[in-house]
Amino acid sequence: MSKSQFRFLPEVHTDAIEENQLAGVRWTVAQAMHSPQYAAKLAACGVQPHDIKTMADVRRLPLCDVDDLRAGYPLPLLCVPEKEVVRIHASSGTTGKRKILAYTQHDVDMLALQLARCYEMAGLSPQDRMQIAVGYGLWTAGAGFQLGSEKMGMLTVPVGPGNLEMQLQLMEDLHVSCIGATASMALLLAEEVERHGLQDKIHLRKVICGSETRSEKMRLAIESKLRLEGSYDIAGMTEMYGPGTAIDCDAHAGLHYWADLFLIEILNPETLEPVPMGEVGEMVVTSLRKEAVPLLRYRTHDLSRLIPGVCPCGYAMPRHDRILGRSDDMLIFRGVNIYPGQLMDVINQFPELGGEYHVELSRDERALDYMKLTVERQHGVNADNDAALAKAVAERLHKAIMARISVAVVDPITLPRTFSKSKRVTDLR
Image (cartoon, rainbow, N blue to C red; front, side, top):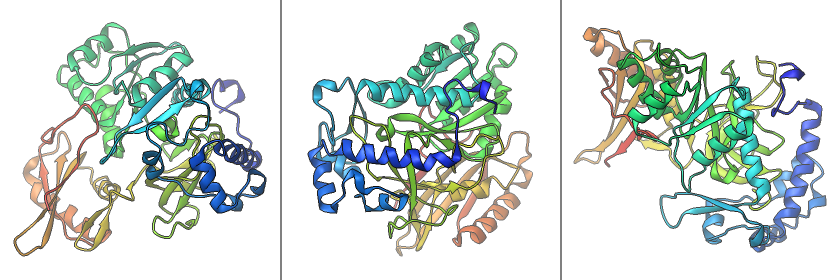
């Protein structure tokens, strides 16, 4: 990637990354002192900004979690005067009140910047036209996608999720060249385009997928059905401004994350000690520029790993792997810990299978647990071999996960489709 290509993407000098991150951590600690909640945590640890001299010193800082956000409702961990807050976004929790995050104008600008960086990494330019098919409102997705698109200077079509007829009409009539959507929504659109034979009437080049993990098979299916030049996964969460904290490139060898905006640690979720480089653990994030609600070693509960070395694309911004699952969403089946990403890894090994799957957990009258994996057959593959294929998948799962799982292979487009995140696990126990 030559210097002339940079517009929003920062140039990366590997030897300066750690120095810049240490300076960012020191600034964040000083900013966090303005919050009574943070100040109490820092006082308990006895850490001041000047104490952060090496990366090892970061581990002296306190860990924070979603409980810290709930404890300070409605404006938790606020580190600026309320008059400087220009916006709030929120994400839902499984219990209790929503997690509300405050934004200064600088924070809003950073949200726009990180999305613009993602778009540039994906090969978009001001000449492209972006259709946004993710949710608007309190969620960061729609607002973030739109901010980044407008910052890049693209014509922006803010449709939101759902309404397939409108999506297809606007996509065709406005010559939309890129769509931002969840992976599930993108696949649904791709199937509709294929079903109606619209491939020659649309002008899509790229798709940006966020909000949920997608398999390699799903990526290839979306690209094939829409005849794309490429499609890309982005990462993000409300606590980290919103979507766009990382994106994969054309090499699809991990997601480049913005190391000038965030420091990422990978910790063992049980011991909270660092894992060796390249091993899977929980992502713990410290922000480096957030004003209203900075993050101090915030436990995301997302499981991933840092990828060593420089990406094959040549861009030296560090990378983390796709999200394997969540440490607090782990499936426990007959004493075995299972993450959805492990199931996707096995499914990806079978070219006869598509990318959509569903897991059902049940328990009989003897209190014995059962797991059933239903996975769609790939388009164009004959159903005569379903039984043998299901047996082969079950055997591969047993070797990979050490659990006996019942497998059923079904026709393409059998499993439910959704405009948002697909619910791929049903626990009936």
